[in-house]
Length: 344
Image (cartoon, rainbow, N blue to C red; front, side, top):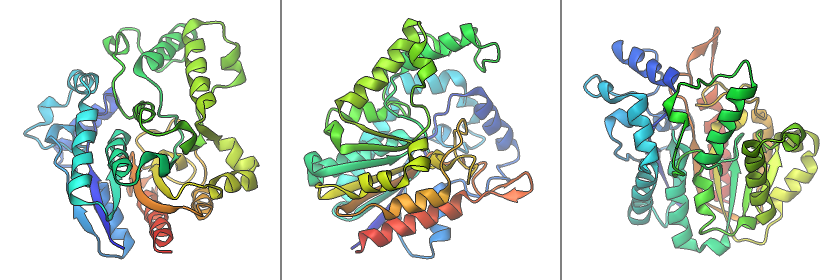
């Protein structure tokens, strides 16, 4: 059985702090970035030889743009790219690459923007039939949320949270179209994959009881949207479920009648507990030991595709508060465990 690693350097992060970090780091040629490509960081830790298929991404959209293109790294350009469905264009290109250059070998995507995973997953659908595939996503976030729903929550926060991190003068939190992006790509996969075949594990943003009781149309839309997807059949396993009901969660993962499984990992599923090398650090994730255990629970179904996404190349493997971040060590160990399962 052969494996092919693909890199995914798409990084259209529109947050001003992250854009400023790119601009400042470019001035010293990114000397403090351990690996400009997380796929290389993982391969270096694996201790195995893998073919790496490099996917072309416009330089200004990568995590470490060159000095020739850094002028294009602005909030305006990132927002325009996302709103014009640029993420979908890259995911579709990746789907063609997997179809033409990878399958029937097992694709392993390693990169930044989680929206790219949709391209690999759709290629897998075509090869194996979506009705035969279980999609397991380890993620702190529920990546079904459309921009209009997300913006509504931001506006509510602006009006009601004195410590809000948002600004009412930010023009990019208004009138956003419902694009395909890292926050919404799973919603668009519902067009192809039966919802009952999808498992989201480690979720931290499940609507709280407090949110359910808020009498505001914007919050109600978010809660209803979330619950509607759950009621359609998508399996949502919260972080607290993993911590309090381990045996039940393991049983859910191990029991399936579907012959094939695709595993998608957002590294923020372990954010702040075990790693700091994730793009989003807004939640305390599960421990890496819990993730190791959950991987071991995957049984009775052949793994036919893997991705590990949402690396922050500035923090992953870097020295933070006097300690070397272990993102690459932990995720390479996860990948080794998944590869071993493919070989059983």
